[in-house]
Image (cartoon, rainbow, N blue to C red):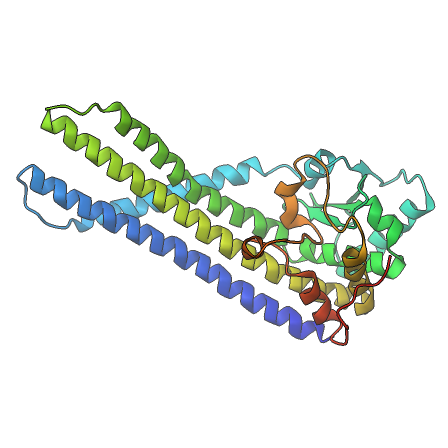
Length: 336
């Protein structure tokens, strides 16, 4: 596997998608400003004012939209400021550092130490999850807060090379700042979602305005309804586009992490074997812990079952990842 070429390609695709995310936010901001600017022009006509499009209103609305997205993003970032330890403990993980209980757990700690040296990062906290599925994750906004979580299924069913490949993949996420990138993308999407929530509140206000013979009250009800519907559509469209772009970026970062794992271990068969065993394993990679789905973008693998689900999948299909690591693969998963 030419891992440097695969890394460069994944980084180029990530940059293009980040620019697309920026462009999407800018276009949505411009469309929202244009719509409210036209509404302002119609209101001027209603009150016998000159029917002109106000560029001042357009600029003010555009800046307001960007400010709301920024504030919503900052709030979400603040909510996610806790280190990866919180996520690992939420999923039922037990800290292994300094207190391994079996030879398998000591082997895991030795592999993590090796990959920390190979990637040039600090030794993270290592948590063992009581799950039969084969999976792992890295969590934390920076390398100082980072932790690794590994399922017992991975510890039991993977040999040393395969476990090393999986751990190397997660170290790539730490080294390349993928955890912080994911957090920022989630924050931007949350900022866009604020408009949907605002639209629902405005629509509720429109319901409170009773229809009657008062033309002034009737006009305000129409204004509330149009504004609320516009905000709801704007926020929903922004959330949809943001989620699609975020998923595409996450898939590229997974390809990057696979290539980096080969760089760290110099053994594509290790991580490739781990992916093949996930495909053959009865429990696959699905974690059963309550609330585990909300952290699926952090996992070593998460399979999407439906075509619609694949659009929003944060991981590439299992076969596509294996094919990049092993072009000679015949498409069959190894028996358990």
